Image (cartoon, rainbow, N blue to C red; front, side, top):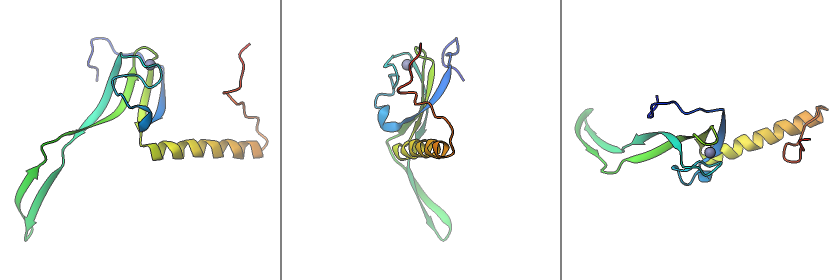
Length: 117
Ligand SMILES: [Zn+2]
């Protein structure tokens, strides 16, 4: 699915905690404004049943917009938004996986401190 004539080039995908994407019209990584947003709409309702038969349904006026992913045309990254709790668990799981790998004697390169020559 593409809203533009030319598809947006996406080089990689990253998971992002929802609180890190406060403005869905800007890229969470580079702040660029050339984004393609994927999402869904949700509308709550109440439906009453009496003796198993529906006697009325009431739709809420408001429609909730849920942003699922922000694709950036400037840095070519697809940001998949996750609830903050799920993102924190993913981070903790990665950290534990690296600790286990170190205990097993595998060489882990710390990318934050890695230097490119
Ligand atoms: Zn970007």
